[in-house]
Image (cartoon, rainbow, N blue to C red; front, side, top):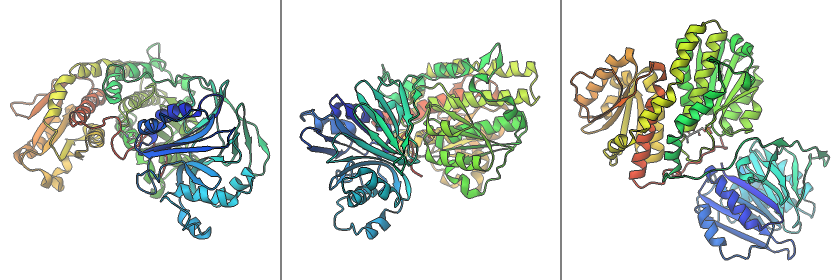
Length: 606
Ligand code: AGP
């Protein structure tokens, strides 16, 4: 979390930083700030405020934009509340600093360096600035080396020393920093998207390497002062964002894009009517020889893993674990060289997923990462990567990333079935025939968005809502409930409907909103009977039902018919419907749909 940026070049740094901070805002939007250093006058200008980058822009509006070297930050608060003082950059003496990560031992450092009286904020970052300043005697390398030896935790630090106006310094542990150079200057940022559209090459700053950003070059040194050769990579994907278009929010735009991006995700992996993963470089032996599969992921990405688990177990008859990446290591997972770990992540930067992946690889597991953001940390850490073609996902609530992850996972399972001899050509063909229908079936739901909007209007006053389903429906609803709670702030829980009578049904009273999906032919009778149980206790039930499933003459508050597909594939149309439901509730409540409170798009702290 938190986005950091630095620019040193020919152009006005304030404009450069504000633009990049806007692109990084999805990493945190509690507060924003920038510091600029005028090389000629040696004057520092520090601007920061609680609120959005737009608020920072207003503050900077009348500034003379003459400096060409500076650093900036957009914050997701970890230590200390959301206010102007806690916003970055922090200044201590000659040191100006922005930070992404968490310094776990900051309290020890306050005691050790006797900083109590000089700190103005409650942040761990200001402590690092103060320690750096203690060590700074005119030699930035010496101060940085001495400081980082004291730091425990994760950090990406970008520093300016007031008496070194020509250079920006950076160092990191775990938290990412990428850097690029173009004809206008040098830049660094938390991710490639913020580097600006003119860069065509970038580098990932290696851990514990001191980086110097000069006007026309980037220099790297290890902690002993030995130069490190920079390793540049091509930016071979489009990082530009084309705005919200005709939609009021990115979330709606991204929901509506799903049929296209799912097609794009499948396109290069279905060749001559067969699943072909050669473009991803995933060898068949890896898929054939593994004995166990384990998913590590967080939030929505973990829910995609749960759907894949149903498929793996039903189609491949293989054992599969799906773990919260943040809990993975604490459960003493059984991992060995026969385990295939799937790390699923939109951003590719989620620290819990990254750490779980590293842990599994140390135990000998092979790994495939399912990632949206190219070149991201998890993609780099994994043996193999399968990219989703969702394109930039800007809304904090994940929609198209989820369904493109599903598309990749369905193809991966299909290929596994083939190489393990479960599918013959005919079975593969039948499987793919269903798969390729997914975008059209989703489109049919999206075309009826106004009907879902009507359903959403009935839920605006709800404080709590429940979602009920069995089997795959339960997995689908776990994601549906996450979506509704994160964008609408309605407390929503998904329950396996068979569990109801073991406690949850006590929560159902008159008019409690209950959302149910009934998409699985063999579970429908039990699901419908569980729905009747909550209706008998007053619940107001909204039903999303697969076309063709007979509801007899039962009555529901609302029924939306989902276009029929083979049961396993019903997740695609059902997810589109649940995403729209969450979206419209949030929009009609007048909330900031794309930037829900307290959240950040990329979670880079544990
Ligand atoms: C989804 O709507 C969330 N905002 C969140 O759960 C997200 O899926 C999770 O943080 C994982 O992110 P990743 O896919 O970038 O790893």
